[in-house]
Image (cartoon, rainbow, N blue to C red; front, side, top):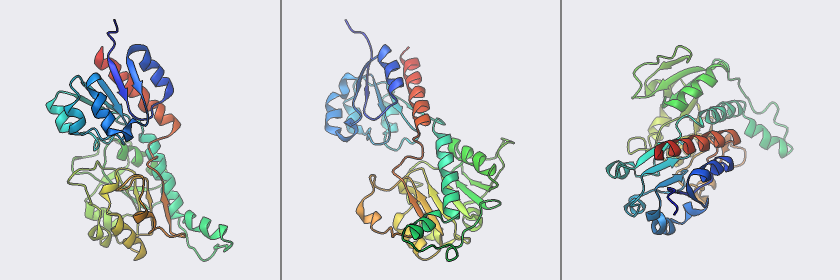
Length: 310
């Protein structure tokens, strides 16, 4: 008789980590299940553990049917796709892979900052059209510019560490951080207002909550004195996208890198507003996903679920 605990995985996981999981559990792995909510609702009653990324909406309807479920592993950090309140009431343990993709996100922020301050998307676009815009576009250097971090958790701190080594001066806003104890992180706690007024680059590292939804909007952009570059690798709903495009078109900001969007995949309503020659970078929610971070995140969750059921 098979007494192994049953684990359901609805999104992609590192294959080696999956092999290790298969040794100890009865695993069903289908990386397209995240698109089939009705099917998850039907089968979830058989499973003791569930492993997801950010596409699977682990809502109350799924959880109501999850009579055996004791553990949800999140291959990433944000928990806005999981009804954590419901889980708490049902004593289901929710485990994010905190810190496992921080290096990857930090590299994305550094490379986007450098690319956008140097206007590389604009130079690229002009050059491939045969314009040779060597003197018509003015670019700048990153050294001694101010980077404002909105959110100073694990990833925010890692970004500060990477960026201060590249000569950036760091301002950090986080209502939950009272002081910066780490002597190695050269950052100054600041108000949001300060960040808007002083920053040359602003990077967002917040969870999506009722408080943070649409937090960066027309009024925020109007306070930005230095026409900063905006980078969002956290969650799409935190920036009001139409206000962002308007701020760019009005020259209130000088560029933006978005790895996350209000609706994913991006809908035409948004990308129709992106014109060739804009100083922007758009990527499909990959800042935390590299070959290396996928291994770290997957191994971490496999270890946590194994320890939990032992």
